Length: 452
Image 1 (tube, helix red, strand yellow):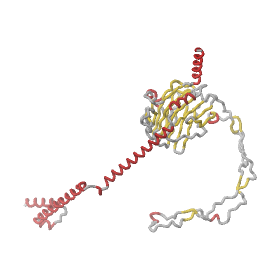
Image 2 (image 1 turned 90 degrees about the horizontal axis):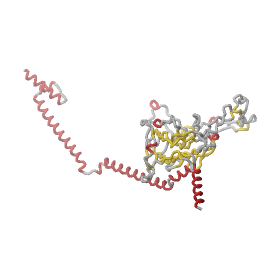
Image 3 (image 1 turned 135 degrees about the vertical axis):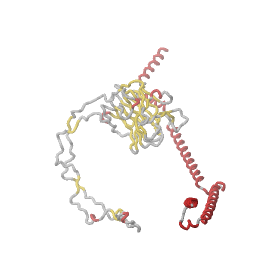
Image 4 (image 1 turned 180 degrees about the vertical axis):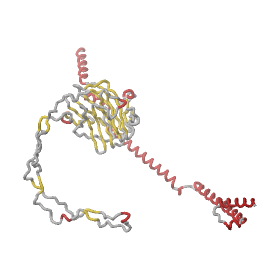
């Protein structure tokens, strides 16, 4: 019996090992080991650094992520996989979480896989990459994109996948299988699936239009035409679409020389009627012309588009609005492995929503407090009616000083008058306006007296 149970235990472990996939990279950013793996672009003038921090919605949580911190900036960071991942005859699963904590207007939050020749410190938009995946939002454009680089081609996914644009954490998963089929999941819900040949233009088409055949010049493919017997009613062509608004009156002070000729505001003419001739089926219609096809001489099949060697994982993009938090990255060859990791690191949506709502309310209260304090400060600075009598003493001091200065000026004028009496002869000859001129004139007179 013991041997039987032992054999069952060994068998179950063996089956579990078959189910479990191999993990080539895993990152949660919850400790400082990320600093030894991740390398940012060394050009600090052009590129801004990511920071590993917790969520602003939950300051007490130990869960951290890789976050953008500066608006209108380029970012570039990468880390090596645990070993080179050759996808030949293997499934590739790349998965990560993303959360936008601030207002998002324009940002491409792609994750990328790079070959072994990547120069991490010089990572930029021109660096060759093997795979791109993730959400892209810019104003009204809102889409999740994914593709492989194949012989320098980077064809976009033909299917449209909406991106969830809110402040919650979302899980993005991209699965590529050896039969060249794929799956894209958001929050473990499938959003797109299919085959490489159908949903990307990696290969040339099998059939092409025959270049030797052209559409005949006399081919009629207009199915409907205007009825030549349908005539416009008389008088409709003389009714204008717009007429001057009777309430638009030329101002009395309008200056045509300065402002130009006055033009009244126009409005829709209620008597105007749109008229279009009736359409009838074209008796000469020959049907839609179909271009004959031939086999494409450049066509070939490739069953190994999916085969690549991945050596690095990273983020490289431009953001207009910072505040994006990336976390829980895993690269493996088994979807169940990725799903188990997602379950292990998942954040409860309801709890997160409550934390976000609490944070928003706190920010609204703080904003109102700041506005109240600023308004109160302005009132204290400019509302002089609320000042005490002691606060206005400086005005009395200034008025008293003005009176003293006026008294001094009157004394100076009386002294100047007495001096003028002593020098009547010179005062009769010349008229001096300013005091400094009087003094200089007196000095000259005294000098003359001394000479005599």
